[in-house]
Length: 446
Image (cartoon, rainbow, N blue to C red):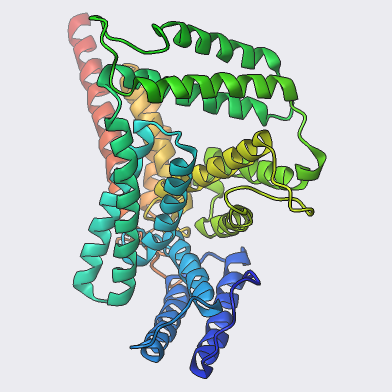
């Protein structure tokens, strides 16, 4: 699982810690693969406590010593990544360990955005809000002091993400406000072309449509510069002009290739397209089919392919670097997949997978009731019977106010109870409105 480039630990104590951490990681992997039962909080916490204990021992061994990264660091990272996703799976999203995997994904995304120099203000805004939320989680966890060194580690990762984010935000600020919509449009067009380029069936006409848009934007320049109504060159004009030229160049390359990818790079391409497509499907069916720990394997596959680059590019068996078209296409697929993982993580509900079937049913009921309300309500109370019956059947599942699964009380009780209450309130509002309408009708007829 670890790359051969990472050396084994030399210290005897570290080697013992490594063996125990590998055993913990293997248990986490086995639990991740077991779909016969839902993930129980107590099972996760036992492995979490064991991991924390081993990391404490490791820190004591290393105290005051100069240490180079070795295999034990990689296994620690694997354990925390898995545990982080397990915390999401059991609904403990608002605790520090759950933030670990998300900070890893954000850092990867920011590194790729920096390398590609291709991003929009919306990309950064989403990650900025997420980092703010993670900071609050870590701050609140620190008051409970379950594992101070883990919170410190996550806080440091958040700070590194913020530093990268700040650099990218500065680049956007260097573009004049009137020119930013154009820059965002160019980013959108380039991404659309990358999607078209990686479809199973290549359609040149779709690329030609984007090319026409690019030409229109390009022709808005005067002497190669974007100017304001007074004829002054807008701040950031050169940056956006380079982006226009880059898009037009990419258009030519994609049309020349006509959807044909070089055979020697096809194995990596096929793996990345497969990952991208699977994550795309998960994003559509997340509420019903995703167990957050599923994301671990996708993450690790992407990490390995991403880290196999030499000086930013992939090289073949003869040491020859991949051509620009191959490099850009593979990097797009990696970035897109990391983007999917990020959105799946931030969309994760703070509800244990044991309660998700109930939670998802309530979300569907709420959407239906809101739709009924927005379309003018119901003509009679009778029309609400199916909703009322379903809500009462869910409410009757509670034991002493709790939704139980066997003898367990899964995490996320508050979220489910709140959603159930919202549905009851909506149903009541519609019933009152229907009864009032019926009374008004009777009065008018009499």
